[in-house]
Length: 257
Ligand SMILES: NC(=O)c1ccc[n+]([C@@H]2O[C@H](COP(=O)([O-])OP(=O)(O)OC[C@H]3O[C@@H](n4cnc5c(N)ncnc54)[C@H](OP(=O)(O)O)[C@@H]3O)[C@@H](O)[C@H]2O)c1
Image (cartoon, rainbow, N blue to C red; front, side, top):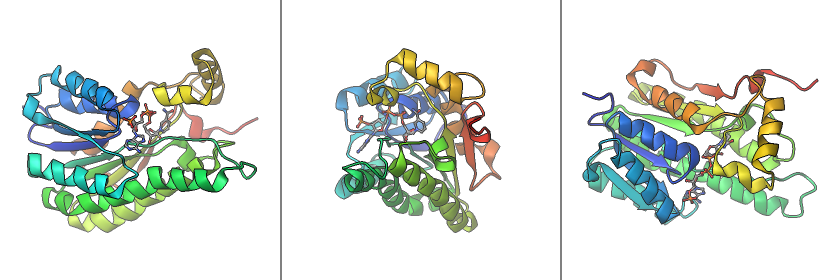
């Protein structure tokens, strides 16, 4: 019997990058999956990659939804429970960074969007999931960032949002611990996903910068984050809650010189 046989895992942002890799990781362990994203084509590609790991079609549900739309978030939870009848693991991964600073013309707009996507939607879906997770004695894994623990210059609102997710992880871990639900987070450094290419840098430039800022001398891959998410959701982590786990080649322990 595979490790996650009979477990239902809901992953937001499963159509790309870390979320897509996490879906494959859980699929390989036999989990039933609810996969959320906005881009139908890429979401379907993720679903196919999960089916290729041996899951039957009824074990993979795709839900096209925008995490910034409250009714969409309600529909995600309703569809998941209608289809699978329960929820064991919620992976709050959907999110994105965007540059901003005190001199940005669009600072307030940027702040509202960063908070709505990276924090408010996580709060809403976790709130809706909580009764189901309490029933299943399940768990939550949030995808935060090194930006939750340290400040990345020029990413003001995103840094604030990910710091809020770290604190949200601790708050909800305390809230849900007596009810048998664990809540943890992963804090990745630079991970080579499509998100990296939106800042106008070439792949070469991204690798070059990553080699300087990560003590291990390189960027990470989504395949180095997904197993840690699965670990935090597994029985092997049964006494771990409120943790924010850095996956950043040592970046969070270094300081500029
Ligand atoms: N890559 C890194 O270096 C890095 C480092 C630290 C933390 N992170 C965090 O890791 C998480 C995943 O990022 P990634 O690098 O894998 O990025 P990615 O490849 O761009 O994937 C982002 C995912 O989030 C989804 N998403 C974005 N906005 C959404 C919305 N409004 N509604 C629903 N889904 C939405 C996207 O779905 P659609 O495209 O289908 O809308 C996509 O599946 C994010 O929370 C990010 O902040 C990434």
